[in-house]
Image 1 (cartoon, rainbow, N blue to C red):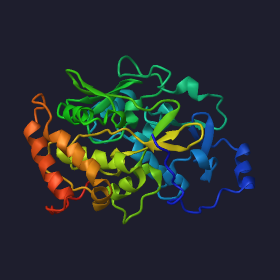
Image 2 (image 1 turned 90 degrees about the vertical axis):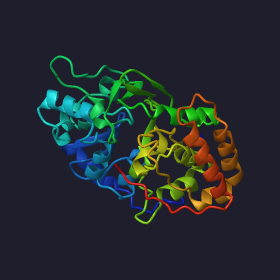
Image 3 (image 1 turned 180 degrees about the horizontal axis):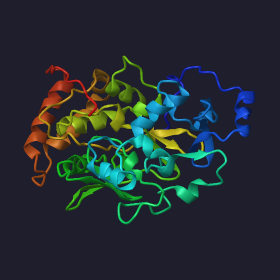
Image 4 (image 1 turned 90 degrees about the horizontal axis):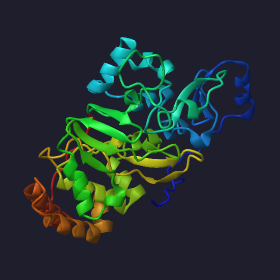
Amino acid sequence: MGIVNLDPFAKNYPSQPADQKMDIVCDDSLLLMCKDAAVYNITQNIKLNESLLPGCIKYGTLSYSQWMKTRYSAGSNVSARRLMLRAFGTDNHNNTLKITRALSLSDCYWLKQQSENVFFSEVTPYLNKEWDGSGVFTGGSISTLFVNGAADKRWLDSNTLLKVNSYKELEPYALCHALGLEEYCARASMSKEGLLVSNFTSTDFFLESMEQSGIIGEEDNPMEKAVELFKEQAAALFVIDYLVEHDDRHWGNFGFIRDTETGKYSGMAPYYDFDWAWSGGVVPLPKTAMQRYGGFLNSLCEKAASVDDSFEHKAVISKRAAELMRMVNGTVSISPRRCQSH
């Protein structure tokens, strides 16, 4: 992945004075950690490590509470609700934070009291077995509670996310491979229960969605911003979306990969989340994508138009490929359909 330079989008926010940071040593504050680095004093609202902070907290676009909500499983995630009810007798995420430490399998953030002598390696679901809903819950992580999105999904283990009863998403992943974009795409396969997506994060690299990054503005267009940052890699994703009629590429389902030790942005996260494929609707690509990468986009469409008969939606893909080629070449104008978060 290419290196992403965020400097053009960063604002000159003041760092926390050193003397103010030292004030925390006398109290037992609740801390937000990134692995074993304390990054934010939640109790006192003090930034402790600018490099490893969630981008939106660093740049002040979201509060800690707002950022945390972007990590919660949606209310429509039946698997998460069942786990919460079994463990806590409630489906309120706020009541699960302390005992689960808000541990996720998408990033390396977690919660601890300052006085606690506990380390990331001892609690992270990347390295330790977590509660799966069987037996009595006696404490520990349940990372399914912190997997965002509207779909019903749960982590089977640290390497595999199951999207329950999702059977229409596999073809978009297969199309990425057919078009030579497999290095940009998460790995996926099918099971009897639904789609299996391989985890592309680890204890070394974590996912930060565009929503969580802090670089977005109220007037920004998600697709235009992505092309500005990620160039051909983002443009190709939007080609796939167009070809499979996926019209829900919002701020929360694409983003960055960050280094867990330095906080540096390593590049664009692999393509993931095609929940709304074959919707019958399309979202035209940004003009900048078509103007700058027209030849590349045309080549992808030409390949797509000739996909083999193993694709169930071959006719749809071919039709949309022809449309998009005409659109790229400036002969067709299609009214845009706004992306919405679900």
